[in-house]
Length: 337
Image 1 (spheres, rainbow, N blue to C red):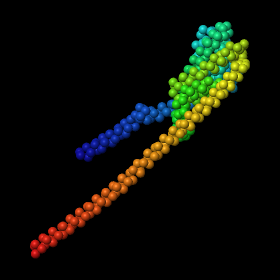
Image 2 (cartoon, one colour; image 1 turned 180 degrees about the vertical axis):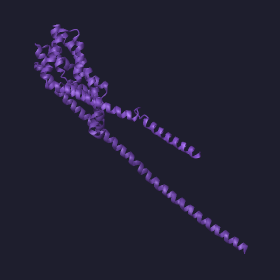
Image 3 (cartoon, one colour; image 1 turned 180 degrees about the horizontal axis):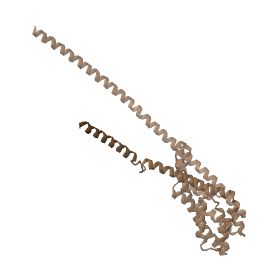
Image 4 (tube, helix red, strand yellow; image 1 turned 135 degrees about the vertical axis):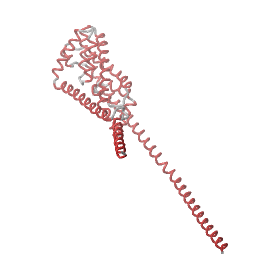
């Protein structure tokens, strides 16, 4: 009977242990999900990231390889905008957002907006205003969406690289600190690839506010290229992006080159400043780590001396007590005799 009770208690103990193990495995980790669910989510996240990259690359390659078909699509859309001037600005915004995310050249849409609205309104000023506002809004929302896509796909990997390499970390910190100035300067330059720049800024730590405000730098370029579109005389040239900007285009390219160069110099200067800050911080940490050792060394020597003195005193006390014991023993022996 006692054996059965012990066996039941043993089995119950094993059951409790197994339940505890299961609860430990199911216990949420800091992310708030069980470990198995977290791994499953990581795999799903990577699959989504890879799918996004493949879709964007596929469409970008198609736009380069099958340029004639892309031109035909642009031609149909520009022709539709010319025939629907009321609805066209709103549709243009949506199309521009999609084109920005999918790496489709936006300059054709910009030129096409100038051409279509000038043909529809028969008023250059109104065409430039409507076209510029529509293009800029579409470009802004498209750039923000592209930035978020780039941040979702690659930011974690870039964060690991910035921790490994100081130069990457310094550049990332410089962009985070001076995000508005950098974005604004580079947006002013027509030489900077617009679509690629959106994704590159997404993998940095630049804030959404600074990035969005920096998008104001697109306004001059948008107005100029919409104006170029109003000067185009036929639909085929607008759809293919063929135009003659003349002296104004040359000036725009020169100014854009200077601004891009200044932006690169500015980032380099800020990055060097951030590297110096990191090195100075490391030196301070090293000095603070060395100081406790220097302070603790005398303290440890003092403690050792105190311990030695205490041991000597205890030894003397033991020796004295031993002598007293022997003297008392001899006195008792003499009294007995």
